[in-house]
Length: 121
Image (cartoon, rainbow, N blue to C red; front, side, top):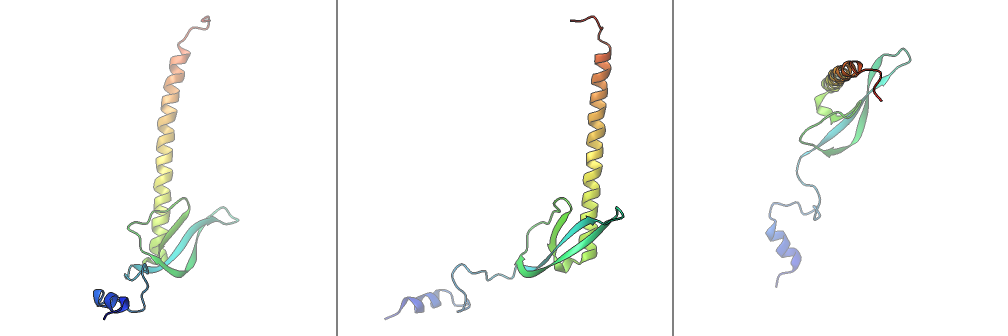
């Protein structure tokens, strides 16, 4: 007669006997760090790294959010800082382009309004 434990062990011959159901067994975890840009007293930016203390799952893509970037430690701080700063620069350039486009539309609207006569009621 077989017990449930023996049946389960035969069904999973390569599984670690110490692995509990639902426990992560894949090797898709790595140490992660957080990088953020802070403005020092002189008005310049500094990249500051907060080192992670535990392993977390590796994601498919890593995108900075604001002035913060969560990245795998294996990437190194230079690559992470470069990625974060280039992302922020691209975002600021997009904001400038959007603002210039908006200013152009507003100026054209103002030009049309200026052609109106003053005696309209």
